[in-house]
Length: 358
Ligand SMILES: C=C(O[C@@H]1C=C(C(=O)O)C=C[C@H]1O)C(=O)O
Image 1: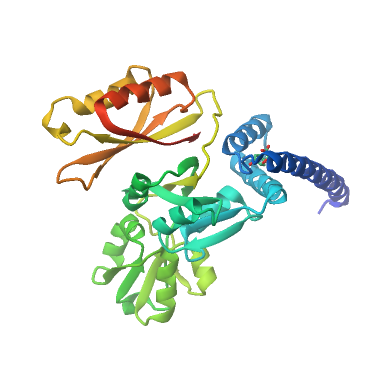
Image 2: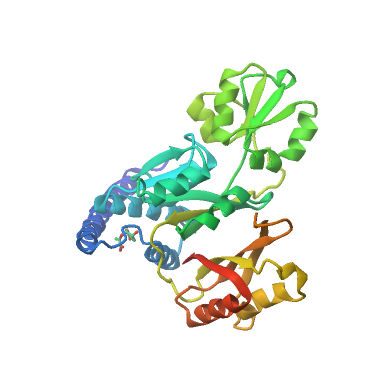
């Protein structure tokens, strides 16, 4: 083998420079933190982080992949934030759920994480300032919307401040051989995302709801004949072996998560923002033709892109709905403000849920 010493010596020199530069960068963030604290400014600034990630990925000519560069920067910014203030993040626990993994992907390893038992508890913890931000799953590419998460926005004034997408891969986790499994536990969405695999390999088992994928692994560790559908992290965390990997029905199984907070995010600009709305129509809207069209026309006629619309029962009366809407653009864009003002003429309520980097 050729002599590696000269290469390693060069790497050592670069590492010294990298460490110096990282610490220099962090010291600047600490100064920014001081300035923010004196005026009560936001510590985590989603739009600035989105801009930093865009800049560094556009500067890079490889060979590092953009995702790897982003992960490194996420950790650097996490360390920067920790110097400004110890940030507290709530997620749907227990430890090692997909939400926990997503929270770590977004905020890195230098902040504090708090496991909550329900979406409602996450919202309450942020509202009561027990934590700074919460992270909630909102939709999955195989299984669709996480409805109980969307419903929380009806009665909350919290804002969506950022979003992230994470690929989710499931394992069958159990102490049992396949033919001894009687019950498979998981969160309903996870079971739904693995339905075909479960039907093919475990056609006669009972599928049981658990409050989270990680809770399912805890049950599988205690109950004879039980298995769990969860991620690899949970298998390691609770010490239950993996019997099968990649059991999700569709490859590229992605989940979209929202970061929720008390203060809204500013605009990134350049078409790189999104805005989410909750719209309630008049109680008798279903009786009038064209109401739905009127609801979205103020957006479409201004060229504002509509990427998702989901109806949910309003619980005011039967067959009455509210609509959750994702659009392109930021609330500070004049055309978005105009569109929302016009929508308010036709709708009982148009609630702005937040504008955040795409
Ligand atoms: C340093 C700042 O605070 C945080 C850290 C950032 C960073 O390390 O680049 C960017 C945005 C903020 O979440 C800032 O607001 O610029």
